[in-house]
Length: 547
Image (cartoon, rainbow, N blue to C red; front, side):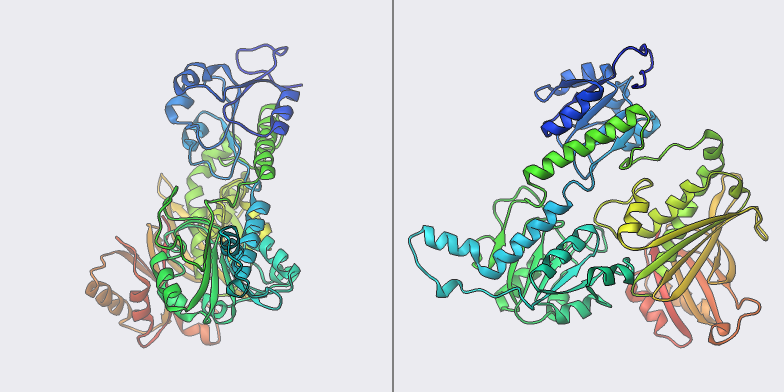
């Protein structure tokens, strides 16, 4: 029996509005459970006037669920987004009102992988160019002679769900597949029969074709730039069916003009829609208007999956693709809420410090008073921090376990009621390439401000601000001063610094190493970190943006 909405009787059926066109299967599923109204032709004014009549709504990308509109939706308990993103939904406003927001993140992964293969084949065999030539009355067989995929090497940058599906299909064509993604376990590579590249440069040196399946972040924008193209094999062919901006298109044009790159296939662009582009009309460039998710099956799948989530949300089921915080008791949230930022920061920091070429495992330990509460939410926050900016889809507190599982990363958490020296402590350990990296933190003061208290066994105390730089170095005098001098030379202002010396009982080479953590007003460029690490006594360093 469906739950009754506030102010309604148990006999009343809940009401769901389908605001945009979805597949018939999704509408049919909703009608099995609710009274469904189709409002495809409604104006914004009519939607605002009538939104208060509905317990659930299904939208695609055109409808903007703003805070103002959500504020008028007194009965609304579920928003289903028939697609991957939720940029058109004010998730924070929905969360404050207790409204579940769910999307369909798996709806287009097969479609995107298949479109990648379609462009790969079109690029290899010059199919679009040959079609245009033949329909123009020409017979130019020799001009459009192509290359085989068989026994060629496909390099995949970004080995998430779509990258893995591309790999499976490419191997069916007899291709050797090489992938780079340090946030996927070595076991997952082995399971798929894919070689793990140790670095992008390793992949560039071997690949005949390169396809990009990275998330779009500040770090990955322009990932394939002039330097990357220079490191590739002569005659390489590149594809982007992921996000516009991952390829520096000016650098790609230069590489095509010089012959370094033999061809390119692009489905996405930095600004869309676009009908004029410097590469349009190039004889060795294949372009499509962002068709990666555009199939009848993907559209139907997205509608059905979003309908499933709305049904679950309104009938007490499990909403597996919710993008806002899952419910925990008010008592637990009051205690654990202030520790969510700390758990996220520690997950991100530990992952940044992990030097292995593949991540196998993430461990989270919750010690002290927080262990007496439901710490599952904190565990999810650790995974979110660890994977943030490293996955094709945006990672959140609901899909985090799935994201980790798809990459073959094992997550384990434990709760211990005692914490030495602290009332509450969170310790996060990342196992990567056989090496263990551990960081620990706690909340200090009445607002439980996040502080880092341990790095690789070195005790220290420093507030976790947005920009954090970590160094490991020989435990000698003058090292802090050297960091301060170089930072000052580059105009970088230090907010605070802390040093953790050699822990008791350590032995071997690690015994001589100390840890230094510095927070700054601005991000520290990798070049500055490299300058410091290149000086005597420093072993390694990392610049981390926790924002």
